[in-house]
Image 1 (tube, rainbow, N blue to C red):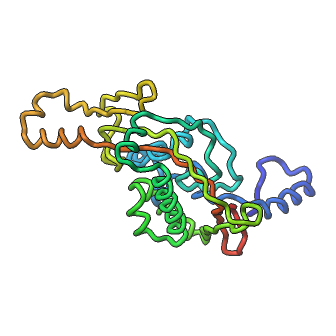
Image 2 (cartoon, rainbow, N blue to C red):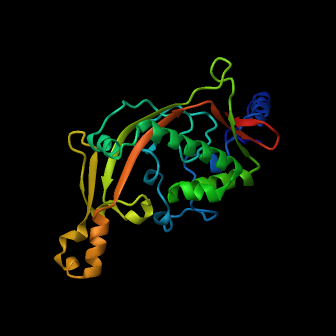
Length: 270
């Protein structure tokens, strides 16, 4: 790709040198850039249609939101809808409500982490194989939509998504998986399918108090007594009030590595 300068060319040798260098400089495709919206399809974003798109902050972890502290990224970012260069350090927390769930259900945390790692590994391998049936079944709807779109764009641009386990990651041996579950919160009143929850303006929100690990979303329509007069609406109110979602952040330290490889066999991301 030739790069033209808007300034007068007073030194031909410098210009030639700059052009020669630019030929070997990797330019990130538009769809790999952080500000590229993969849910817009081929339609160009305008002020009229951006309100219908899904915002990044609606399904990315807190540490990936636009207001979060920036973190060091690979120069060629893969820009998939999860943090790919390692999760930032977060202080491990224990919350009363979450611990009560484990104690009352008699489910050990290690069993949960083992299951979640199997799902995490399967999602990575399914992303490599573009097994959208599996991804749709195990991933949240909005996360799945964005992941599917980005994988399709990688393929359309001749870039291969590769997942491999480094069998020599730990001093010549396979790495033992390390898993941590932290900052778990019980959320009452919301559906796990985020698109069904509407806007925050539709709820009275009672935030976590003294690290109890419980956040309640109470629909504002409950303040209208007329909604309780209709038996059908009354049942819907009861069902909505008993929605429970358990949210936790989980980190895995593994020997799995992800590569982006172009059609010439060059690794763009590792």
